[in-house]
Amino acid sequence: MARKAFIAGNWKMNMTVASGTKLITELKPLVKEAKCDVCLCVPAILIPAMTKAAKGSKIKIGAENMHWAASGAYTGEISADMLKDYGVKYVIIGHSERRQYFGENNDTVNQRTLAALKCELTPIVCIGETLSERSAGDTEKVLSRQLEFGLHGVEDVKQLVIAYEPVWAIGTGQTATDEQAQETIKFIRKKLSKMFNVKDANRVRILYGGSMNAGNCKGLMAQPDIDGGLIGGASLKLDFAKIVNFDK
Ligand code: 13P
Image (cartoon, rainbow, N blue to C red; front, side):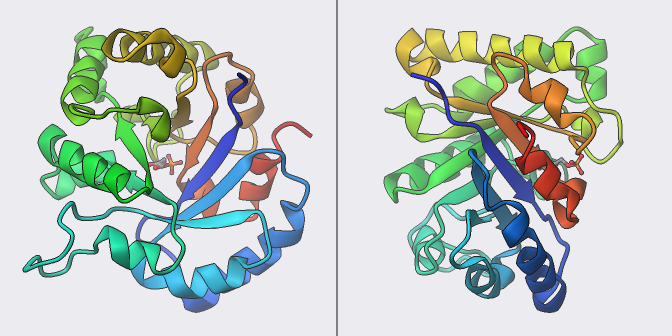
């Protein structure tokens, strides 16, 4: 079964109600004909207003993180049920910026991933190597560990989305080449087929993320194992529509 393309934005800590509403209002007509799934993951506090702004369009509003507990004494955190109150379906888990600045690790990624699946949210689980890990020839080892620990206990891998985001390509303008991204994502799929099974691994959508933009999206999307993109900077502008329409 062919995998449906998926273009997701990650606004990170950007936008306000006014600027986000303006962007979504302008994006709506531009993505009307999109054949892929489209999502914008936005700061939690913007979810209600952006959901309202995106109403009646192809754009689904997702979250950038969630806590694994159902409720409790976790000051500043957001639960799956709170996201579901607003119809959220997708949630980014384990972004490298959370790993780098907020103590996220493979264990907390695992807890968040299992909790999201249990609550019928679709986690977009982020993995990726740093420049020094790639230079040392450790890319496959690092990704294997992130997958083995991060997805430990997952029963149905088809229910989640993987985003391969090489840390050295995020926000740097230095995109992985089409071949580098394809080769690494092919490795990820092979690893998933060993951890789960070939049939399910072939149904998991694997996105590329890291300086993906209107200019390089066509080449990346033409690769057989790349099913979409997780877009940072370019999701803050109308260029996002060009990526969504990569097949036009
Ligand atoms: P950029 O597209 O800005 O490099 O960010 C990628 C990213 O981190 C998406 O999650």
